[in-house]
Length: 109
Image (cartoon, rainbow, N blue to C red):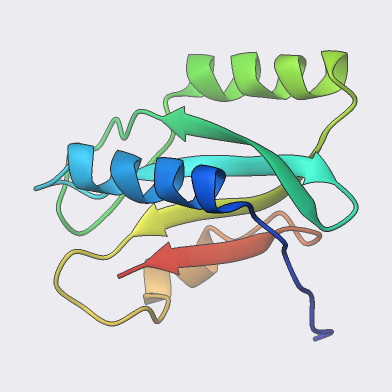
């Protein structure tokens, strides 16, 4: 596994954290998009599982975000989600759902 870095502005970082706080007591999820290793946009996704221990993107929102990224010539750099009461280590389910090989997976805990 090769190491990757992301560069995210304070404003976009705070936007991601705010989304995680706003969805409490359920897990939050979303996409970090940009160019190279620089995050330029946060796509806040709805967690259709509405669960404090699991997440799943709303498929319509996911498709809409992918279309928007294409129009803006952005790449999906990372997928993020929150862990409310556990450390920032991926669960077995998180590992099984990590099928975007070129993405970084961010856990906010």
